[in-house]
Image (cartoon, rainbow, N blue to C red; front, side):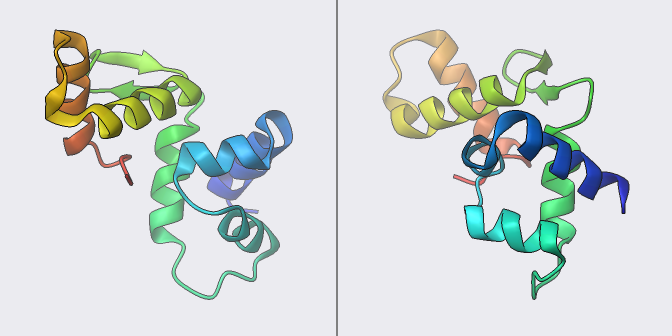
Length: 107
């Protein structure tokens, strides 16, 4: 099994399918199909997301300029996407601008 598939498998085992789906920004069906080898399209994008998010060192966050947990990344991304440029808080605005440029942002 490819290393990134093993990372995905371990993430689902450890974190659960629902959380992994949220962190990757894809459906549960997509995750299940990829893991079973039945995903009909290219898995290049999924592979890039898995390698970026489930790197053992964590996700590199442009907003905080450090590595963070995948769950923190998903929370920050979701909050930034909801608030957008309406952010009155400098941290929220920084997150919105950084998440918008991040290759891991699917929202």
